[in-house]
Image (tube, rainbow over all chains, first blue to last red; front, side):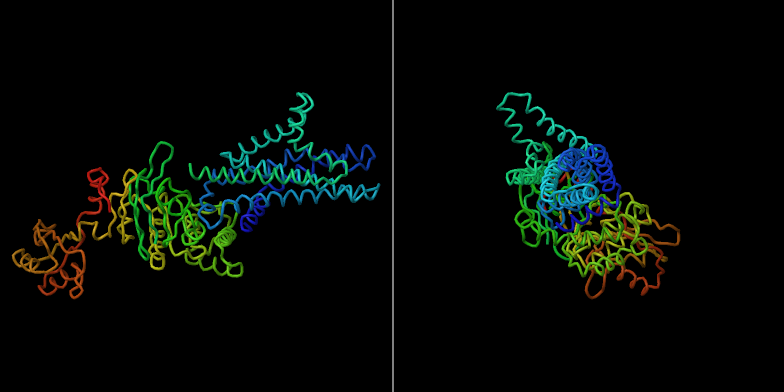
Length: 233
Length: 320
């Protein structure tokens, strides 16, 4: 698993993928920072984090698109699947590489909080809670998009499909208010965005942590299943 | 030793392998022969655990690939038809990655990949990105990756396809070298390649094994066909040749020049422990007769004849 994790991490920064993903995220988040914090003369970092969380929809497909789809497209999966490495290690190794880049991206947003700390007030407990939810939400998106990559034939189709799935997850949240109450509650219960709300109010929610981790584990298990089914087909 | 036992593999409705049983013994170079679509690549992919069979068993040193995939895969190095390489990595990075995948201890990796790179002739491109290498070097990197972790068995799928003639010669030489220290299984549809490199041959046709035998046995049932031309009268040469214990049959033919006597000899393929092989015995006889030898070469291609006969479907029901 370590070998896979290390290779994928190298691949992010040997190619433009890692730089593009982090660059796009930081560029867009700096626009949010300017509009929400600097222009408003506000130190409300939780609102800023809630805006940034929509960027996972864009960043995660870029990070995960080639992880499994490209192995299949370029037949490099032959090397991995004929090595003494289990499918679980293969999928988890790749996932952890994507999560490492997510974590690095979250760390880089620290610059924003430092700026706010210099000119205003930052509440560390509230900020850490918000960032935990933000990071866990990114981990859940990355796992879902990795599953999409495992089901796709090429990196490009994986990216497009993952964007579609992420958009659908977001829409699910919006639709919750327009459908019958019972359906709305189901959609809200399943929504990755609704589940993040306690964190964005500064409350640490074990239920939300468990939910994000469950989504990630379920998506990874499905990715392992998809790869195994394809081997047997 | 790798063994396929009654293995079946289907791709949808198409049956790629049907009740295939074959054995690749330790210490031999085994050639898997067959026309395109015969099931060679499928058989190799099953041996390496790339995918599981729909029926039957794949055994590596007696262990079932389904029950102990990690143990089985540790014992096998595989080079598919297109080497699976990551173009953005350098040769060094790639081999280090494969060594880690194959559970080589971290401290030993630099020396291990240096040794492998030396064996495969990769020193000059060791720090170059894989995406910038020629096809021949990419193939060599594929060989090197198969060697990572020192697996006792190496499997190559059509290792010389698409290479230029010089690269083909180099790769064959590399396989010959590796065959001295490893068990090697490789697929090919080139009979000459199999004849040059293999000690055992398996012929696959339409997803079934139609023949498994030692190369000598397959090439004419222990017989060797030789064309000979020597300077001197036939009346003196022919009786002397017939007297050799290794000569089974003899047919006199026209020499390429009027002063030469020609003949086609059917000899024992297996060498006599005391007198040597057929060519040695004939050469000594001609020296004794003081008849200068002008030509002594294998005649025809009996493996080709066997292959064509088997893959025309005449012996489709035959099993090894």
